[in-house]
Amino acid sequence: MVALSPAAARVAPEDRLPAAIPAMWRALVRGYRAEPMLLSVSAGLALLAALPDALLALWFKLLGDGVLAGSRPVVTLACALLAGSVVLTWLLRIVSDRIQRRFRDRVTIALESQVAELLGSIPSIAHHERPELLDRLAILRDQVFVLDHMYMSLFSTAGWFLRLGVTLILLISIHPALALLGAFALPAVLVSAWRPGVERNAEEVGASAKRLARHAFETATGPLQAKEVRAAGLAPRLLRERRQAWERWYAGVSAARWTTALWYCLGWSLFGVGFVSAVVFVVYGISGSAGSVLLLLAAGGRLSGYVAATVGEIGFLRGIWLDGSRRLAWLEDYAKAETQSADLPVPERLERAIRFEGVGFRYPGTERQVLEDVDLTFEPGSVVAIVGENGAGKTTLIKLLCRLYEPTYGHIEVDGQSLARMPAAVWRERISGAFQDFFRFEYPARQSIGVGDLPRMDCDEVVRAAADRAGAGELLQGLPQGMETQLGPAWPGGVEVSFGQWQKLALARGFMRRAPLLMILDEPTAALDAETEHALFERYAVAARERGAEGCITLLVSHRFSTVSMADQIVVLDGARVVEHGSHRELLRQGGQYASLYTLQANAYHAS
Image (tube, rainbow, N blue to C red; front, side):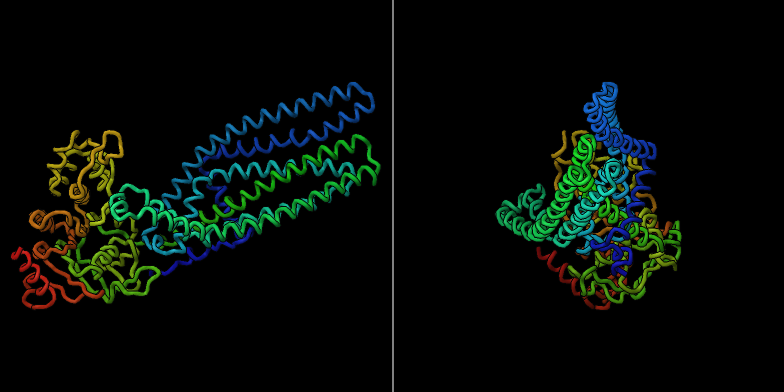
């Protein structure tokens, strides 16, 4: 089913601190596993650096008492302690910063790699087409580049809390009532912890508008679409739409920021009132000594700075650590939930068949059935062609076989076993193919072809054989440095190749794997002329039948009936249903839709 899984629905932006604590702990464990020594040392130095800084107020009191008492030894000791604290704070801060920077650099790679691995491990691509999941993923992608900061923020927050604790103990040593200064600081701390969550929630509510703004900007400025954008004069319109979308997003974010800023000011005003009251209380209420007043001024003044720093770090923790770690935990759970049912092995070779039994499918977030009650059997060693009008469900059928989506209902079996229970990554290792919407891998030509089978990418013989089968052999020979030629003019020494040449490279990539269970050719030669395509697939069909004993099934999607006529089985899709299937001769004898389309296309071809 493509319905939103429990793992995907479990995380809501309004989750509170108690629900986020497990996610925080998981993030901390994740960082420890990546760099245990650096994390431990960074945390220890952050705490150690807090002590000499927090004790400065005590040395000021000692200095004041020594001056008033005229005691040179006390003054000397106080000056030495002040100097020692300043130097030690500075030294520990430098060492701590250097080690934390190294930790950040190393843990950043681990976090980014984990996010990429998690996204890549999700079998289906349904999450790329659900707006609610796209919004979460968009924010997570933005956060992943600053997730390393959350560890530093955690260490800093612990240091600031230690400073606050020491400072409050010093204030209490003057009078227990001064502990109330901590209570006066509490509203500012609570508002700071609440503020980022509200603002982040507002950002997520408007995330689709922000994504639209980014899309409009990338469309207006990207190189691939530059010709069409200029020819149609779209740039001004796209930039105007970008501005409008951005303003829709920012309107909600701005309102949230103004509201939280007001509460933030009120919290700090309350602390200011408490601090002034404490000074008045010590001077007039208990007639404190000059040293006590000096301690209050020094400790109280530093307390405000410590509270401000703590509040800032808590805000960052709330906005990045709580939110980012919660989203990362959601992604882990989502990926795990999508893969935990894979408990059957992928067969080494096909013995019986691949079967669709009552399969129906509709894309996430839509109600229209793209496939409906599909029952098909693909025999091992056969070449199967799938034809139909645009939107009939041909490519969707291929995507279900690749496990890019799961059927909405019904199931697919491979040799009598459920395909949904086989590990998607292992199943895809046994699939090879080329697609109409191929990607241009701007690597050296060898790699652009070789990524179709990574273990054999560096084998010249295999790469050349794949290129020859795809009709790309002459293309490789004509490149300036042959297979080592960098493709893509945006790279140093790179060369541009035509769309048809890119398509041949993509087709060669699909021919890299040895003895796949399933070979998929989804209109991979649309840029080639009909004769070239026919000759190419005629050679391939002969080779496929010669490999039939290996059990490989070849699926061919094409609009050219002269090409599909060589298939062993032809499946005709219309209106989300299979309306005909059989061999070319059988379908011509039936005189149905296939026969009409074949005759119409053949007549048009001969007339031209």
